Image 1 (tube, rainbow, N blue to C red):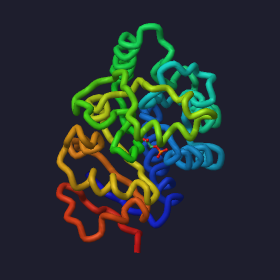
Image 2: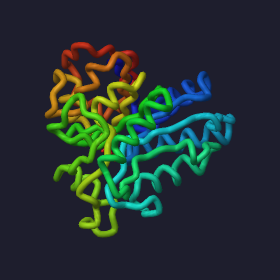
Image 3: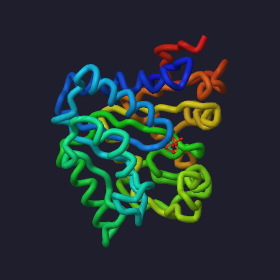
Length: 257
Ligand code: PGA
């Protein structure tokens, strides 16, 4: 696992966007894995800027998102399809037909999970997967207790996740109790992973993730098993790492001090 620490959230997000942009420029048919949430919003803003000002070309790129709420149609303002359309897909020259999220309104959710896995496989697999992290260590919506080799599945959301995300819903009780998420095995199969965490509220879970061996109690620890994973933090998210031994973690850049 490689670790990069930036002084603030904006430069951490720019660094994540730069990695994605470089990969896309080198391989225009890149299969990008995408994430939603507050942390990655500035990453998408930067990618849009790179498209507008530096002609970053998404025309042949294909994308797969980590997850989608069960029961929310694409046009719902809290669906992840809506988030992605607004923040990235409709702002750059991506073909919407090349953008994929699980369908949380599918009549048969188990069949939808299998369909999503097959679609990823048919694309040749995900080249670069962007990840955020929940305060309980979830990646995608793989909550604590998740199997480390799970595939795309329906996940009941934990109380922590509901508390963290319900603020985004007009009425907190409108937040779905379940989501479809890529599994930890699906994420581990991506050729490269890029986890971005910013802000002091992520410092505790980042310390636990980077210091713990892989355990279902902290789903993000599965990334220790990944051969090509980079973690980008801002100083606030890295603030509990000082003086710690981090076995298996290579500190590539520390622009903290
Ligand atoms: P956040 O969500 O970026 O809004 O903190 C991250 C996540 O829950 O994966």
